[in-house]
Length: 398
Length: 154
Image (tube, rainbow over all chains, first blue to last red; front, side, top):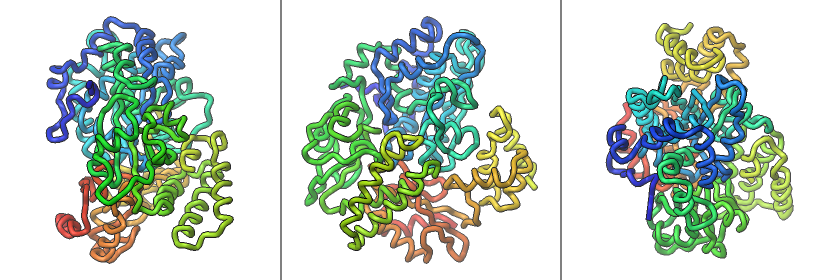
C-alpha cells in the first residue's frame, strides 16, 4: 500500500533536511515542472488527478486554481497561501505533515505558485504549532539557500518568496477569506463571495488558499501522474487521505490510507476498537463541525461523497469517537461552547444564536431542560443553515 | 514609547507587507513578547507608530485570543478544553490545577508565576488530554503529572 505523503515521516526522528529530502526524490517535481511544463499544463494535471481540498470543503484543487485570471498583465501580483491554521477541535493531521515533512509542503506550494504564476506565498500557521514553526523556518532557509525559493529559481526566470506567518489564535482564521483579513492585519471576519479569492484575494489580488495536506499531494501528482493518483483510492475521490481517530479507542492515532476506507476499518483495524468495557455510540467523522455518524454507518466509506450521503461531511477526516460512557449532551455542549466562543461576531445568527444554544445545552446537561428547548435548538439549526451567514463555519457549528 | 528593539522588529515586519497597517498584528506580538502584555500605553504607541487610531488597533488586539490586554503571569498555561480532551478528561486536570495553583481560568497566581487559560484544541487529539506551558507541549497528561510539570517553571 502506497503512502506517498507520509512514507518518509518517522515520529522518532527529525524530519528530512533538504539533502535527505532530495535524495528520496524531493524537489524533482519542481525541477521538472518549472523547466518543462507550462503553468496551464500543471493546473490541468492537478485537475485531472481529481485532488480535492483536504481542508474539508472537498473542491477540485486544479479547478480552483483555473479560476485565477492568467491572461493580460503578466506582472500582476498574485499570492499562494497554505492554510496551516489547524484549529478545528479534533483535527490533528496537518501537524504531522508540518513537523514531519516540511519540504514536501514547500515543494507543493512552489508548484502551486508556478501554476498560477504567483511570486509571493505565505504559510499561515497557528500559534500553538511551535515545533512546526521552528522546523518551517529552518526548512524555508534551506530552500532559499538551495535556490528553490528567491529570484530566478533554477535559472528559469521564475521568482517566488515564501514567508511564515504565525497567528494569534482564532478559529475563524481557518476560513479562507477571514484568513486573508488576518494576514492583512485585520480582524478575521469573513468576506462576501463573490468575488472569490482566486480573483480578488489578499490585498485585492488573485490568491489561492489551500490546506497543507492538499499542497503535499501536488509533488507526487507531478512525479507520477494523475492516473496514478486516482488509482491510490478505493473510491471516486482520488488519492490517499490522512485519517485520524481520537477518543476512547485502544490506539488513537493518525494514518495515511487509501481514500475511501470504511468507518469500521478505521475504527477496528487502525484504532484498535473501543477500550475495554466501552461501546461505540457515534463519531464525528471529520472534526467538530461535522455531523454524527452512528453504528448504522460503520460501512460508510470515508470519502467526500459517501459521508455526505450518510448525512455528514468528511471534513478533515479526523474522527472523534463518542463512547457510551460519555454523556452525548455534555459532548455537544462542549462543541457548542467552542463555537460560541470562537464565533467572530460578523453575522447575527451565529453571534447571538450560538451562546443561546450553549446555554440551552448547559441547562439540559444540568437537568433543567424544558420540552420547548428542543424546538429552540431546531430553530437555530434553521437560522444558522447554509446560505444565511457569510461563511460556512456557521452551518458547521450547528 | 516603543523601544529601539521593538521598532527594529516592527520595521522588519512592515518591510514584508504592502501597507504599514498590515503589520499591526505582528507589531502587537512584538510588543507583547517584550512586555508580557499590551497595556493601553503600549497599544497607543503601536497605533501612533503605524498611523492608526487606538480604537482600530484595540479592535484587532481584542479580537485575537492570545493578545493579552491585561497583565499575565510569567508563564502561560493553556489547557485544552476542546472535544477530544473533554472525552479524555481535561476536567480532571482543571480540577487539579485549581487546587494546586488556587486560581480558575483567567486567573494569575499570587506570586505572578502562572496565568491559567482555557484554549481551543491544541491539535494533538490522539494524545489527549493536552496542555501547553509557554512554548512547551505536554500530552497524555494525568493529574498526578502536574506537580512535576509545574515545578519546571520558576
